Length: 137
Image 1 (cartoon, helix red, strand yellow):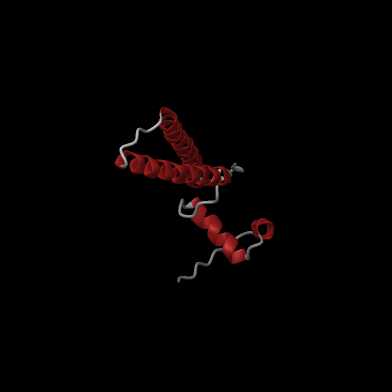
Image 2 (tube, helix red, strand yellow):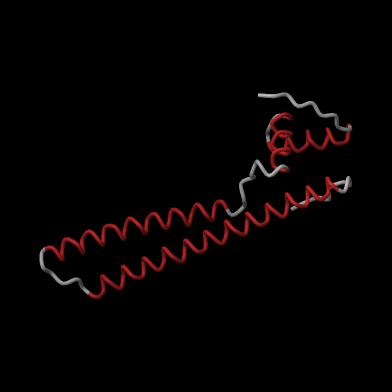
């Protein structure tokens, strides 16, 4: 690990300490995260993370149901039985639900990635211009 020494104004140090207090982190951890986030290395947990986790759980549960139904259908076919139309319709519905949830998750992730990229670009532009970075979302 390497040591990075940076001088900041008293006002900036107070802001950093206030942020560290809000995040319940040390000053060093806070400064490291801010620096790495601005460089596009560290990613803050998006507000959509909970929704993405829920969609992932839902898709996983549906996937387990689909596996059970398909196993039952395969067993029925091996015994020479017909598969009821209702079972096929239920399977199609579950597969459609998985596709819909996957699309929604992908959309949330893409939107968040675009927001983060815009945020990092804004920081970089402010740094190139030598101006104070405006408060960012």
